[in-house]
Length: 146
Image (cartoon, rainbow, N blue to C red; front, side):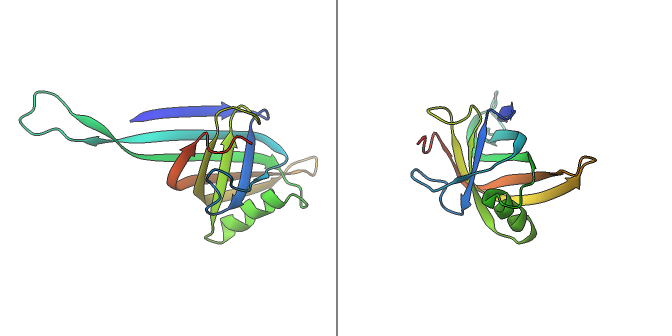
C-alpha cells in the first residue's frame, strides 16, 4: 500500500464547500483559525497473482484520503460551522487541501464524510475543535489552483 502523508501547520489552507464542488472551478470557503491539519493519501493494492505464479502481481486499486484539522472556533466562520454541523448530520462535505498554502501548489479536492468532531474548551476560554474526515469518491489532484 503506497501512502503519501502530509503534516502541515498554518502555512497550508483548507477550503470547505457543498458536496460536488471538489472539481475544477468549485466554490470553496477557506477555513479560518486553523492551527494544524494532517492528511494521508492511501493507494490500495489489488493482488492479481495466481497460485502457481513465482512472484506477486500488484496493481493500484482504490485511492482514499483521511485526516483531521484543528482550529480555534469562531462562531462567525461559515466554513467552521459547516464542518461542525456536518459532523452531527450525515452530510457529505467537499474539501480542498493545499498543504503548501495558496497559489500554484499541490492541491487535493474531494468529497468527504466528517466522521467526528471534538470541541474542547481551553483554560484561556478559547474553544479548540478537531474535526476528522474520510474521502468518498474520486480525489482530484491539482484540481483548481485559482
